[in-house]
Image (cartoon, rainbow, N blue to C red; front, side):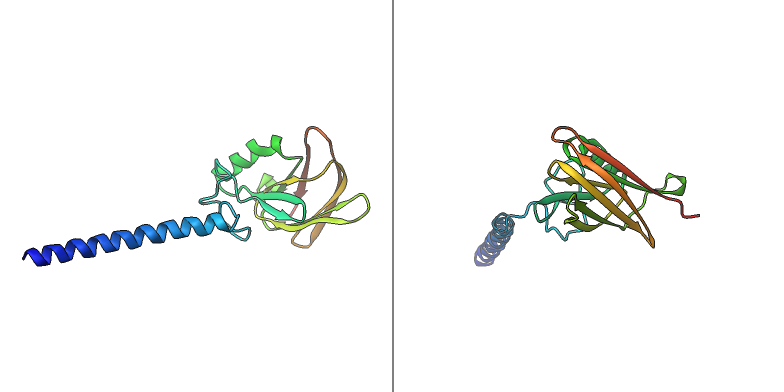
Length: 165
């Protein structure tokens, strides 16, 4: 009887140690990968360290961006973060409906492409160097282009609207 109790304690201690090592190994692997809050291909905002429901920040060259806003938490987080990002984009349809899956291409004054991606929701925040750019946004088969000037201090905003009737 005493031997069985000791065996159970040993098995329980071994399981506890294995779980602890597994969790610590996972945390170490995430820290070693230099990616916070998941990968840049992660489609969710769950578990990221951006805070307050902000979706995963992505990187393309030297341009950082974040997009989303389909859920209420994410939408509020993106709206509140606009003041910290040089460029804010919004995509809506008829009836002020929010649009996702908008293809976005940003080119600089020399027609050099600095960003080419698809927005995951109605809001996209982009960290660009100050300067003049053209934003090309395509929803389904309709494309729009708008010039924007990103100031050295402050922010620029551009709203794209598609009348899908």
